[in-house]
Structure formats: structure tokens, C-alpha cells
Image (cartoon, helix red, strand yellow):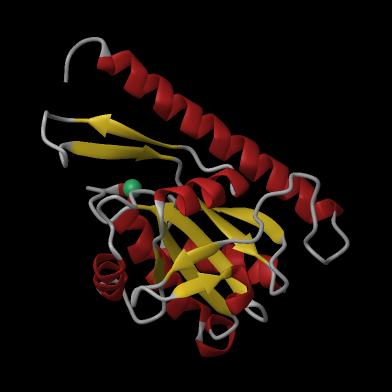
Length: 203
Ligand code: NI
């Protein structure tokens, strides 16, 4: 890392933190002010077509009837993604079988160049049986990232084609069984805290 990249990284981290604070602040506000259908003025979320771990097309409509807990990351992530997915798997246990059956955690890669369907499938399976991993074309991923206001960018670490990491925002999005955004859920908390937040939001 040279000296010019350091301020950029710091700036990105600060932007990510600011975004998370804004989302969480807005989520609390909307939670108090919505009528129960989860529709909000922020317009987070929307239709998507992606690929599941078997390379089959999947759309948002395939998850209707369940709450979705959506997280964006990538399988080569050194720390934040595995920590978050561990916490999500733990939260599913802490919710208990009845509540967990109403919730579908989704891990959507923002590194579609490297994250093939098979790789994403194998990766999420390591955290537990409940998380569905999705990938897609770079265009499909760009579209859903826009819909969910997800920030992601390649960060070069060397000259080779795979010498990069991904900077990305880290927020869990709780979506209603009809696909509407309910609230952001902090991704940097324990499984127990995430489960407690979900219980409140899922009613
Ligand atoms: Ni990550």
C-alpha cells in the first residue's frame, strides 16, 4: 500500500460508516412511522434476477412469503463477511425454529468476476444450512447494488488479474414477505443482538 491509497481507504471507511449510521437512523425513524406494510420513502430494494449456487436463475419473487435478510459481500473477504455470516448463522439459531423458518438470509456477492455459483454455494454452506448464496453477471450485480444503495469497489493489491480486494458497505437489510424494505440491521453485532433486533422487527 502506498501513501496515496491510505487516505482513500480511510475516506471509504468513513463513508461506509456514515452510510450505515444514516441507514440505521432512517430505519429507526421509518420503523416508528410506517403502517406495517414496510413500504418506505427511501425506496431500498426492488426486483432482481440472479443465479443461485447451481447456476439457476433466481428472482426476488422466489422468496415471497418469507422475510429476507440480505447481505452483500464476497467470498474472498478476509474479515468482515465471514464475521457477519457467522453472526447471521448464530442469529438463526437464537431465533428458534419457528421464527427462523420465516426468515431467509441471502448472501449476494459484489465480486461476480471471481464468485462463481459453485464457489458461493460452498462458501455459505460453511456457515450453516440456512444461508442462500447468490451471484450473477456484473450487470445483474450492479443493478441490485444500485437498488439496495450498496457501495462496492475494486481495490488493487498487485498486478495480477486476481490481485484485488473489494471495498464494500456492510449492512443487513430486512425485507418483508412482500419484498418491501423494513429496516437495516446492524451487521457488526453478535448473533444474539442481531436475533433480538430481528425479533422486534418481525413482530
Ligand atoms: Ni466483506
